[in-house]
Image 1 (tube, rainbow, N blue to C red):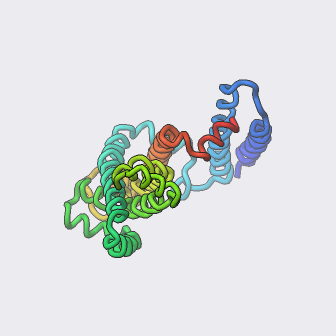
Image 2 (cartoon, rainbow, N blue to C red):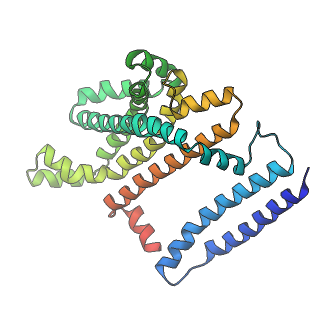
Image 3 (cartoon, rainbow, N blue to C red):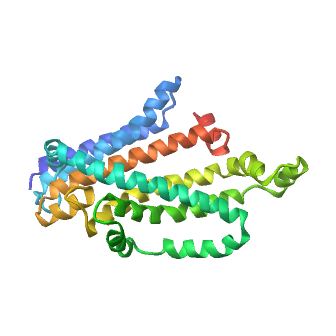
Length: 291
């Protein structure tokens, strides 16, 4: 055991913790300085976790098969960049994104149809609840048999996983408008479509974006898990399952790091679009006023 690594990592963690506590409570004069401070806090926290991880693994001589240090994962990531890019393209750009768009779009259209038809409301919502309860490990092999081993079968799994969150959230958002607002639209002789576009959809945007943010993480998880049940020799899920069998745990962690970065970036893009579209919402205005 090398105590120098452990003590160095712990001291760095304590110093970073104290600096973060000071930075969180600090209020700067300029907006740019406050924005930099807000960004620095999570970045410093992440660096602290990596340093502590490195120090503990090296200090206690933990076998790399159990937990490789971040430096080893970074080396593997840099040296295997072409493989990781190909896996990212197969899993994220093809299966996850296409399945996300189809599942969210179909869920939105189904919610609008349910809102229009009481018959569908009684029949489709319970069916959607049933589909949402189906396990991914049960759906994935069936989709592979239906759509083949390539990315369309993984996109189909993502469609199933993202359909119900969008359906439920959009239905709740469309029902969020009050009776007074609907009566006002009736006094203006507004049609159902005009009421939907000008009143009910704007009120439902926060619910819709909530579903989009949930689906941004579900899509990548579903695509990766679906690749465990049959895929060409490319893809994040294929690489993880293969490299675990070969005991190349550093490659597994490199794939996990790429998936985490992709999922976080995707979630951040959806959140930024939400802020631009729902700028009028109290949650967004309140956050802007506090800054």
